[in-house]
Image: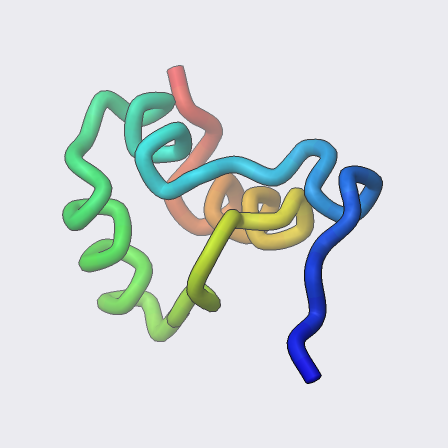
Length: 62
């Protein structure tokens, strides 16, 4: 059975491209930097709690 996200679940979610744009980096670069720190993001949109982890590891975007 597949699970579809409802709008409440994706509110605040961002794509890798959106996160990378905050850092002015390519999305693959963000993924590589996170892998170097031992973090593997799940496929699909990045939920707010995962975004917070990214900001903690890479610093707040400027």
